[in-house]
Image (cartoon, rainbow, N blue to C red; front, side, top):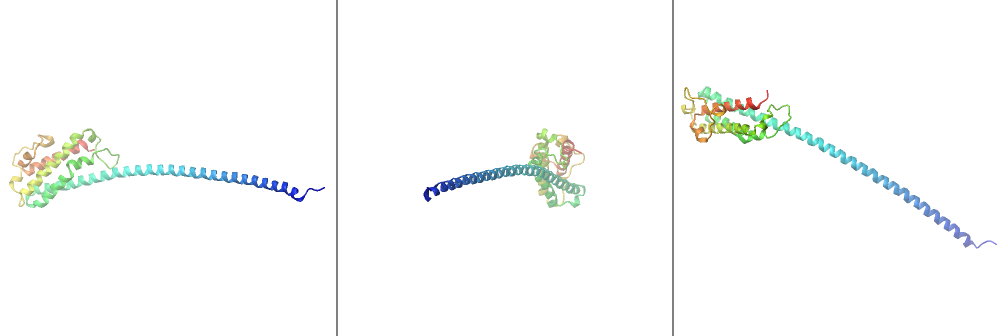
Length: 224
């Protein structure tokens, strides 16, 4: 005797449900594995990107430091050339007083004033590895001496500026050194300590002290 149709269908339906559940679990596990694999790949990619970013940042920082060093060397070399040109202008007027023009004399003095003192000291505040630099490493070890020379240079330039203001016309005898006048003062002699002492001396004397200061600085702190 055969079982009723519904009894034959029930086991078949149960088997179908079991198969569906089994396939669903397999599918879920498969997709879960795919998701986990994709997440791992994304994490690895993110880590790689972070490593690349850190490397690029280090390279850029190094390049920026090198560029900054080269920039400061270029700036201070430009300032040195400007001061040398200004000193040449003043020297030419003392050699031939008929070429003296108060405005040009003062402009040259102001160029030296503005690029010496604290500005000059700041240009050499730290060591650089630039091959373009001729600054000696002893600047940092003799900081006080270097700063004093930079300030002396500024003070002599201020005195020259004042002389130009006092003599707007032709170069007067008061600006010139007297025959036989001692060349003392500055790094090779008695240091000119105050503004009154500077203002009392002829402009030509202050200029020679300035040149002595430059020579001392180059001899002591410049590498050839």
